[in-house]
Length: 179
Ligand code: SF4
Ligand code: SF4
Image (tube, rainbow, N blue to C red; front, side, top):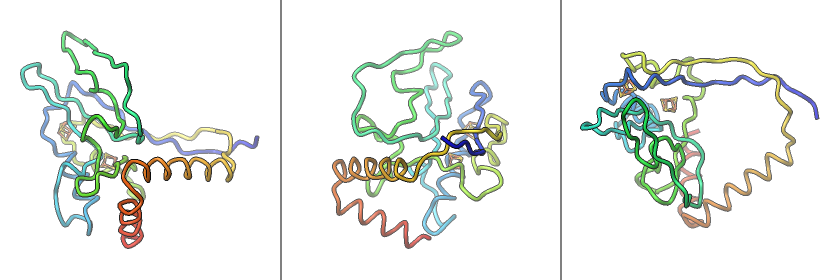
């Protein structure tokens, strides 16, 4: 299969520096408001701060893939004496929690690295340098158009099963209007 150069973007998280100010949630939700910057609602943010004051835990977590089925096996981590809850490091929008779901429709949210922006908004507005944006180029195998379409179909089918076709069509219409 042919190889193509791909730009890999990632955000390095230094969780020990986070003080839970939630500036990142505010910036992300404002950027993704409709119209842009018209409102602030952290429930719409693609980054959420998992907090546990008594344990001194402030953990930034980014929205990742949607999954239609909640997992049956979960993990508890203890790092530097702090115990992190079962779903702490998970990035998925899944049926067992409300995190990373659009509050009005329940549709899953996913971090888009603020597509089109030079620097992700959460990185820009984190004044404690918890979040550091990095980019690199990698050679990867080119995905065929058929494979891409197959993945898209599977994703849409799962969303339609979970949220109903009407809600899904409504969300797609709103996204098109945004474009
Ligand atoms: S990179 Fe952009 S979309 Fe992703 S969490 Fe940060 S502000 Fe939100
Ligand atoms: S803006 Fe930075 S310090 Fe504030 S909650 Fe987000 S990651 Fe933590």
